[in-house]
Length: 141
Length: 141
DNA sequence: ATATGTGCAAAGATTTTGCGACCCT
DNA sequence: AGGGTCGCAAAATCTTTGCACATAT
Image (tube, rainbow over the protein chains, first blue to last red):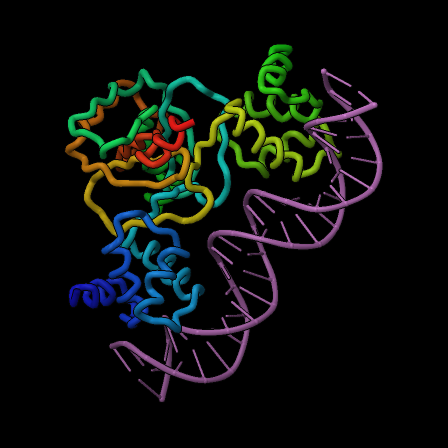
């Protein structure tokens, strides 16, 4: 775990005790935890830590690319009436989303069994990248 | 649009003016709108509609399966430290999530060009379905 | 006529932010 | 020593809910 200190230095971040414990909790988690859930785990090591600090460091880690965000649209509900099978392109910068018709990608085949008892109804491909507007914004600087 | 009345009847829902306008706005949208964004659009037809009604009917539509939710984890941030390429299984009932190693699925090939200027960094497959616990809960009744 | 929906406003939940004390380098 | 972080509490967002009146069937 000493390499975490190096990654902090590389990112220009002070390596505080809170950050070490928080990052370790994220490494050990296999369930894509929420901030609240992480807070519970971290409190077992640092009972005095505040939820605000958890949120603040999560944002810091995300901005430095140390961790990833699974829920690209957690900010608010996103809806659709389209019930045809289709996929999505999501811009990781501005979070805009457009449909990709199912014919645009090859069908998906499972090569390994899913966990026991799981039933899949539909495979949705999320193409993560940059939309035209955000891509040109990035190259311009 | 008269068929919307039938779908309401089928779902046991009164077909109010607000619902008709809201549903039409969803049909016409191509951008996976948020509740707030829908509210703006619907207000052009019904200036007196309230944001609460929009939220309430969105929930009603979702529960009846008339529309779909794109953001399965909008409720809160979900994080991961795993930066290996992998996919996700998401339970549409309890929203739990597990990783599926990339080797478990065939590689994804694009057969149609993406919209001009878009850059894809990564394809992530979301397998939507029911986890073991939720699946057995459903069959039991 | 009755059950359900609507508008309004308050409450709940999640996330961000301002402030003074404290820690990392 | 000095800049950034921490804990705390208040503010900002997003969403749900209780209530009295209106609407759909």
